Image (cartoon, rainbow, N blue to C red; front, side):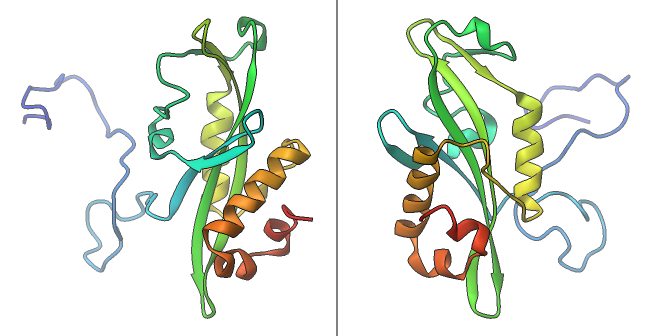
Length: 175
């Protein structure tokens, strides 16, 4: 059997890797892919407190956002000589009878020194926070007040209706 690139995979490997499917994997067929994780309603938002900006960067879904490219990350903060703080925020949207709302909002810290091409991030934290966002958690306590305000303004300006239908925890991002 050939893989998607046309080469034969190692025949000694067993089991299946983690699969992310687009669309509804439980659309009634009950076969392959049922229970697979769908990231259709999740968006990565980068918060830059230094420039006072927040923006969507879909490359962050695969650790390839503009700020992450060409950076060697380590789990040791000491390896980043002149750290610049960033926050990667996983935002999940859900829908209820009133309409869509921000369901899960979880923030992950990153520190990047673009000149030295070094950075700090905790990959396990990023994966766990992504999972928590999908499950409807709001985890932004680690963020500084300026970053929380930038995130809150971004979410509200993106769609005020979605922001207003969200939980009190999400609306607390704006004083």
